[in-house]
Image (cartoon, rainbow, N blue to C red):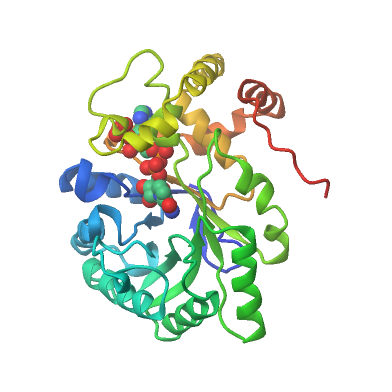
Length: 327
Ligand code: NDP
């Protein structure tokens, strides 16, 4: 495993990490979740990603009880949660980024996890109804209370993140260190263009999600629609519509051939492509089966195979290389 600083913070994070969206407490049994965490930890993954909304709190309960059972030393791993969506309650105070929901969301997450503190606490989406100042103050206070160590954002715009930074700086508060955006071969603009200045100016770290575009970039949907996969899950039509398009499948078929020429499996090449970007602090893996995780871990070594020439071939297939600012 390789490790790097999460942005300009001193926190050392593994370049691959493990997430629990749609899997823990939902698609997979707790025994499979435990095996996935075992494989991850034994292979040097030190970051486990979670959120209050995942399986409406159940994902944190499952992950927390596995951590308790394993009894791994608390200084060997990082755990996150994310606040914003709540756990399903529909009342206006049960979600968002007000001081009330941030404080209550954190306390409730800690209870579900059975942990004393979270390493990372992220604002899962921007909240247009709460002043950013209130959110920054609340996160700062949670750090001072020892309930979280670092905080950040997910799917915020560069402008919103900068606003949080400026407010924190002017008021000597602890600002965000990390953003969690989607990043994969089909979704590049935020990481490659929108945030490009912020790696230097505020030392933004990134924990990127859906590196396989929910499985499309594994190549398994190329010729048929396999049963028992994420995109066939009930209630996820929106995710299928987003990812399972004729245009994407055409490109994935070409990528599959390129990977074959390199003697790699497509999921491994797709993940290695994300790791090639030095502004990606960690690629959060999702897996519903042990074998997937074992395979995906090969991405660390495989990135050496992705030479400039290979990266150009990938760009030629994708035809979506963002126009980068000239600085
Ligand atoms: P991916 O895009 O990598 O999708 C993971 C899914 O793809 C697996 O659950 C599995 O689904 C399939 N898959 C994975 N590996 C393979 C393989 N080798 N061969 C075939 N199929 C494979 O990542 P996720 O979308 O799960 O995102 C990763 C993490 O990021 C999440 O767990 C979560 O922690 C975080 N996240 C954060 C978000 C945010 O808003 N901040 C949003 C979404 C995710 P199956 O077997 O069921 O087909």
